[in-house]
Length: 178
Image (cartoon, rainbow, N blue to C red; front, side, top):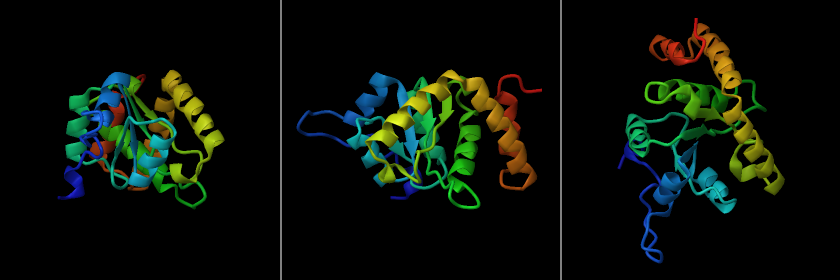
């Protein structure tokens, strides 16, 4: 099928435990981590994060948004690739777009952006994962700082025609929007 209708690996069945471990983990932790690729998801899984879904690129499909709404997590961490070594950090821009898109369905207090400490999770070592985990938790606790960064970055992206007016208008859902 088309990747735009996937929610991988949400319904991957484990015959040994007779369960859906990813779905169970997301429901138990009430947290969801969104990543770009299967490789990122596997790297997180190897480090104990089994509450991940793959976007299969830099955009969240409408189908995946629907699935996420049904899961109703308390926390959604957008962790697309970190292209900070390039002149344009597409992963960061896409994470901001995803944040704005998810504002249609979730309050900003449930959303977080925490990019990998390296280009992607497959490039990270144990220490990098520890640093990423700490940063992820700090970001949840400093939501107003994240929202200010989203607001500022969205204005820049909109002025550069990198996000649509419709998506840009979602900044009205940020706290302290003027």
